[in-house]
Length: 141
Image (cartoon, rainbow, N blue to C red; front, top):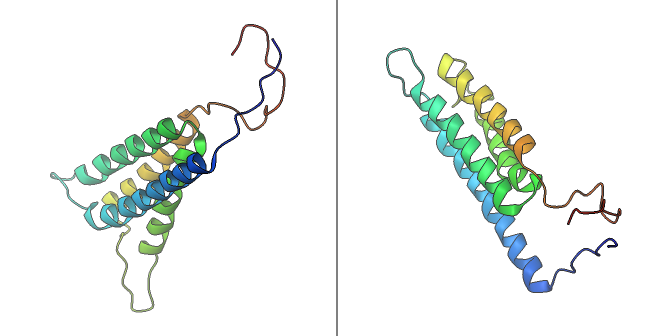
C-alpha cells in the first residue's frame, strides 16, 4: 500500500468550499456584533448572557471545524469574531465603547477567546498539511 495522491479539486467543488468559508466568516461577524451588544444580561450577579454566548461560540466554532474537516474551518468564524470584539471594545475618541470593562464584558471577551482556542485545538484535520505527500504507516488509510 503506497501513499495515495491527494484528490484534485474540481472548479465546482473549489467554488462551493469558498462559498462555505465565506458563509462561516459572515457567521463570525454576526456572532461578534450580536454578542457584543447582548452580553450584559445578568441574573443577579451572574453574567448569564456572557456565559451562554461563550458556550454558543464554542459550539459554532467547533461545528464549523467539524463541518469543514479542518482547523481552518474553526478559525474562519473565530477570526472575524475576534476582530469585531477588539473594535467594539476599543474606546472611540468620543469616549464610547460597546463591550465594557465589567464582569460580564470580561467573561464575554475571555470566555469567547478561550472558546475559539479550544475549538481550534479540538478540531482534527482530515489530512495534515505537514504530512501532505508523506507515506502513511501500514494499516492506516
